[in-house]
Length: 77
Image 1 (cartoon, rainbow, N blue to C red):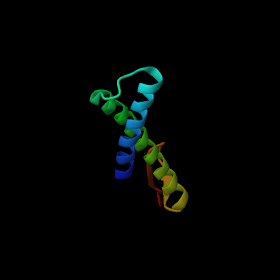
Image 2 (cartoon, one colour):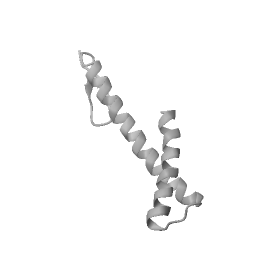
Image 3 (cartoon, rainbow, N blue to C red):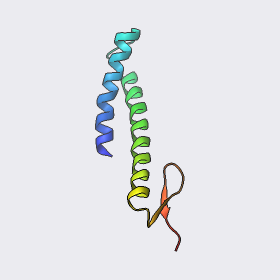
């Protein structure tokens, strides 16, 4: 999960640059950088969790079942 946070900060800088170069936004605005990084981080954490659920259900299907999009649980005995 720490890698998602680190790469989201880098991706937030890239998104800020795209906003600056394509749409004429401000490049060196800390507020907008934090907003962009937070949005990237939210999508990153959701994607990480969804992928982890798919892994746990696929690789350990004899013991786990899907319990929604972002959760898994043990199979009832």
